Length: 364
Image 1 (cartoon, one colour):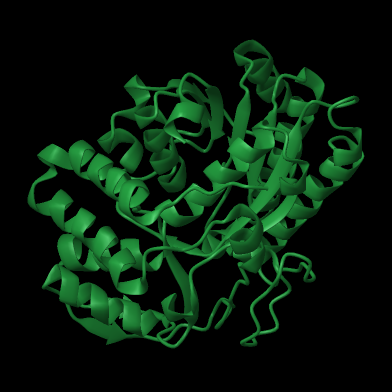
Image 2 (cartoon, one colour; image 1 turned 60 degrees about the horizontal axis):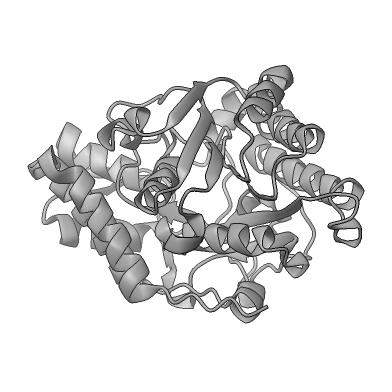
């Protein structure tokens, strides 16, 4: 993986966000050249600043809803690989501003795809959506890539629409039947579950909320939906899948075009209450107060079937639930106790994950 990505020019949209910052750091460690398109970080603190990525990447702080700007950047930079992560990612914010959510997630995705189409320089692109694209029937059955898409809340609906737009572009303009004679680009769609990890201070997300209550407010952790079950996975897990997809697409593996689920094994499907209790154990501080809030609809259960990624990509979730929590909350504990070595601490987690927990076997 290091050898493959070395010296590749890679565009990451949303590189100033939580997942984008982790992905940028991984690829910088592998000596890739990173170009980023994103809005400026909207939280203080934020991982982008902590890792000093502004001084390590080429930055375009621009709105993905501006097509002419997206095309101009891609045409100028000529990236070989694109990871599209930029989005309005918060379910509760989507209720407050549904138009911004839809325009960012749907039109923004279409703009990136159209810019890739018109410039013709990109060989491999991974479009990141979410597990919430599925028509959620609130059952124990894990959703497969060919299950119906839907979306109750504006965020889920916008990401499902972005997913459909991406599939349309694949079929209409980046069809594998025409590769490599008529088009030189292969594109995949990646759907991941509830991602956790150090450096996330986003609003209305469980782990950042826990951290704020424990370290900043010094108050009991308020949890709104204690019995909701989520597929918790450390951020490095889906990112490893995205990287595998990008590599395989670049190498011309047409079977990788299309949609993919990246989620944890069954033992990592856990309730909000359970995760909160375990976080307190790891942090060695904090308490819980349940304050139910049903004012805005959120799914109570959602599971992903990852058999496709396991059988074809040879990808698998390797950190169990406890390990994912320890990776996450030890990062925050280190930040609040001694923030001077956060870059080294982050890089050590990346190295430990890829060295000890992730085996690449891409035989497709």
